[in-house]
Image (cartoon, rainbow, N blue to C red; front, side, top):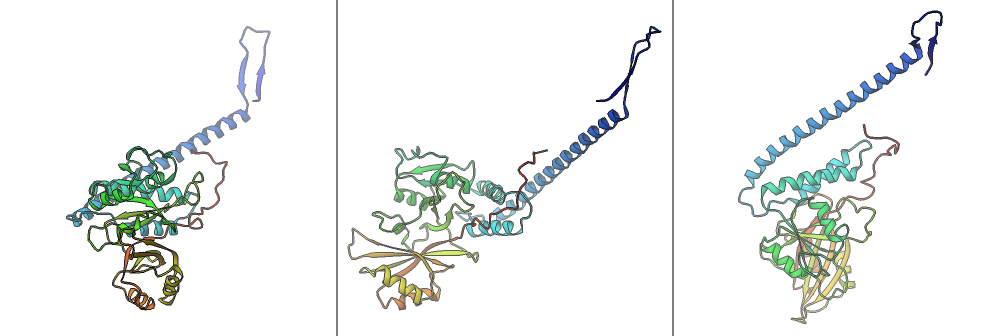
Length: 338
C-alpha cells in the first residue's frame, strides 16, 4: 500500500496520514467485488425460493393425482418415473452433473410416493445373520442401490429368503422387493416364484442401478425390483419371458426359436423343478416391451414346435441410463461455491 506522510518538526502538530489515489481505487474495487458477490448470492437465494415454490406447487398437483388413484393398492408407476428422468436428462444443459440431477428427482418422486400411501423396501440379503441386520456394508451393494433409487428416508428391511421377500411383496408387507439379477446355473433361483397368473403376483418393474453406480462399487453390482403392478412401455424396455415345458428344451434351441420369432435375446437360463422333475422353466430376457397377449408370444410358441406348454411374461423394466447419457459438460475444477 502506497501512502504519503509528511512531518513538520517546527510545529507541535501530529503527523498526518494521507491515503494515495491508488489506495482509494483498491478499496473501491474490493467494495465493488463484495457488492457483486452479495448480489450473486441474493440471486441464488431468489432462485432457491423459486425452486421451493415450484416444489410446493408440484406437491399440490400430485395431491390431485392421489385423489384419482384412490382405491389403487399400489400407486407406484415405474415407467412414468423412468420417462421423467429420460426427458430431464435429454434436455439438460450446462455443467451441473446429470447423475446428481437425476438423484434430486428420484428424491422428489419417492417423497411424493410416501404421502400417496405406505411405501417401503425389502432387500434380499442371503448372507445376513438376521433379517433386519444385513451383514453387508450398507455403503455398497444391493442395499445401497435400493437406497439410491428409492429415497434416503424410505423404510427398508432385509430378508434372508428370496421366497419370504416375494411373499412379503405379494401381501403388501413391503411395497417393493430388490433381488439379484438372475444368473445361469443357479441352484435356487428366485424368479420361478413369479410364474403365476394370480393378480397379486409380483412382477419385475425395474433394474438397478438406474442412474449409474458410484465409483466405489463393482461394475457387476446389479439387481431387479419386483412389485405387484402392471408394466407400461417407455420405448426403452426389456422383458422377461418364462417358457414352461414338460422336458428340457435346451438353451440353444430356445435361442434359435427366439431369433426365428424376431426376438433379440440378451440372457437365457433354465431351471428344473426338484419337486416335479419333468417340469422345466426357461427364462429369457429380450429387447422390447411384450405383453402376454401379444402375437409375438404365439409366434415363439410356434417356433418351439409344441415343446412349450406355456409362455408368459414375468415383468419388464426400462433400461437404466447409460454412462454416455450421464456424461456432463466439462467443469472448471478451480471454481468455488459463492
